[in-house]
Length: 388
Ligand code: HMG
Image 1 (cartoon, rainbow, N blue to C red):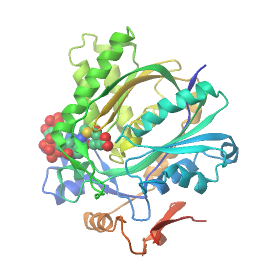
Image 2 (image 1 turned 120 degrees about the vertical axis):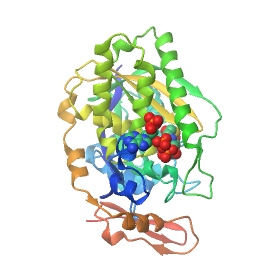
Image 3 (image 1 turned 180 degrees about the horizontal axis):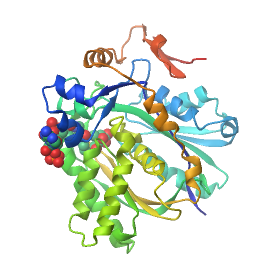
Image 4 (image 1 turned 135 degrees about the vertical axis):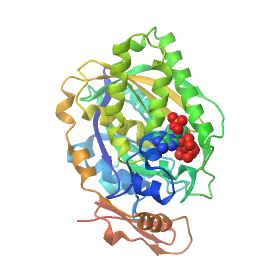
């Protein structure tokens, strides 16, 4: 049975910060951010959005009335969860009106959480071929104003439906994993901002990629020439380019090298516009690649997922015939409608983030045009609402 991704959608804030402006404000050469880091814009997440509302806004685009009845499992990947106990999947089920016979859980392993969901969904659908699984990866990447990581912030959510006989990508059953206890990036329970050893994390990203890629090639008797594209988790888009270069630099076949570089450029287009979105990042890159419509039916792509701490997985997918019909310009049009903010306004919004607190509070939800918003909290319960 063929199992894979049937539908995909993306949501982020209606506000962004031009990276050139951030570079100037931090007395850096804009080309360091635009080329050296590979980011053009950074999503500025309003205080009326959290991982639950971002996920609900993304999923709303693909969960119609018929899906609400059919979905039997909700897998919510995040490292920006809003409660230590209650899963974001329950809020999502309620906000979207998904039938109450569906089960749902939250999955956490840094940026790897959504990929863990992909593997769980594969097994679930293999046992229940009629199943339709809703997966979301939803996060806000915060490092702090003026920190080294600031230029790699961002946020947003990817939503996907997985099923048998999918319309977009069949996922391969084999993969290569690597798990190691390292401290490259982490976020203690008392913080909304990550702590990171930036250079070390970037080195480990490449080490994890090379090891899982080489293991996969060896155990599946594969060749790099059989991949139409290799795509990555993109904490900043230059990271993926560096990882790709590490396996193509010695290639003699220039055509394969050029093809992989061309496809990589297509796969980073949307991520350049948003910044890091942690769990959703690899899948935004997949959407970006599919959006270019350059892949042909049946072609194989490699996907590298990395979650700090750390876990890496290299797995594969095959593009389904006719996928182009289902990948519209909606995401690009949505990103083009956003409004730029100044560095001063970004800093104000950043500081207004709803940190865990005991007191009742209200967000600036009236300014937010998103369908689902976080209004604030009362008696330590978050108040969500759908705007008309
Ligand atoms: P930095 O140290 O300020 O930057 O921050 P740099 O000095 O390393 O420069 C970056 C690049 O710009 C370099 O290129 C420079 O040469 C180049 P590279 O050597 O990398 O090829 N450069 C220029 N290029 C063009 N024109 C210029 C110019 N000047 C310099 N004028 C750092 C970089 C990544 C350390 C920082 O942003 C950071 O700490 N970010 C957060 C951590 C991160 O994203 N790590 C990535 C791997 S870990 C991961 O992916 C997991 C994660 O998503 C979390 C999770 O799993 O949950 C983060």
